[in-house]
Each structure stands twice: as structure tokens, then as C-alpha cells.
Amino acid sequence: MTFDLKLNLIAEAGAALQAQCHGAASAAGWWTDPKTGASIDPHTPHLVPAKLCLIHSEISEGMEGHRKSLKDDKLPHRSMLEVELADAVIRICDLAGALQLDLGGAIAEKMAFNAVRPDHKIEARQATGGKTY
Image (cartoon, rainbow, N blue to C red):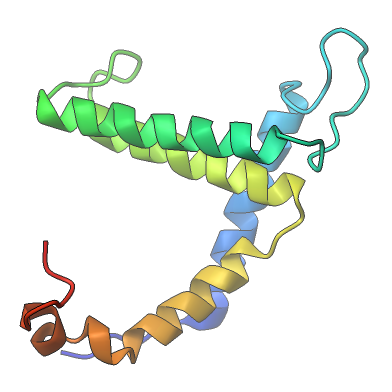
């Protein structure tokens, strides 16, 4: 089975998602200091680590929802895992947008790289010391 990577489409979709997530967060005031009304500089010391911890917390919440087979409390027609993964993607895209990263391009390039990585082939994953869990 072959997988045809549409690298331009992946990059464009990633850029669009990043722009939407960061735009929504900005519009909601997440990049404005509530005390001063000033814009928050994404390069402020400790801001990136704090945002990465928030991303990690979404993943941890998803793990807990999966462990307990829970539905989401805000979107009860969806699993908690699904919604928390969405929250993590939203937070990742928001941060990437704030830092003006090319997340879509990086995803496309990484997928192309991973498609030909020897250590991602099934034989390598099954080998001793391979990428099995």
C-alpha cells in the first residue's frame, strides 16, 4: 500500500488551521494582558514553557478520558479523548501562530521525511530495540 503525500495541501491546511486557531485566541483576548490591555509578547520569558505545559495538560486529560472511557463534559456526543486532542491541536496552532512559525510546512516536511525513514518501516519497528511499545 502506498500513501501519496499531498505536501502542498498539508502545508496549506496546516497554515489555515494555525491562522484560525491563533486568530480565535487573539480575538478572545488570550494574547492581551488583562491588567494593562497591552499585547502579550510571545517571546516573553517563560511564556513558551507555560504554553507547552498547557498543551501537555490537554494530552494528559485525553489520556485520563481514554483510561476511564469518558465522554466529554462540554461536547457529550464526543469522547473526552477526541476533544482533548482537539484542544491540544488548538493550543499548538495558537502558539505556532503567535511565534509566527510555519507549522503546516513543518508538518508536510516531517511527513515526507517519515515516509522514507528506515526506522519507520515495519521490519525496523519489530526488530529488537526498534520503535515498538
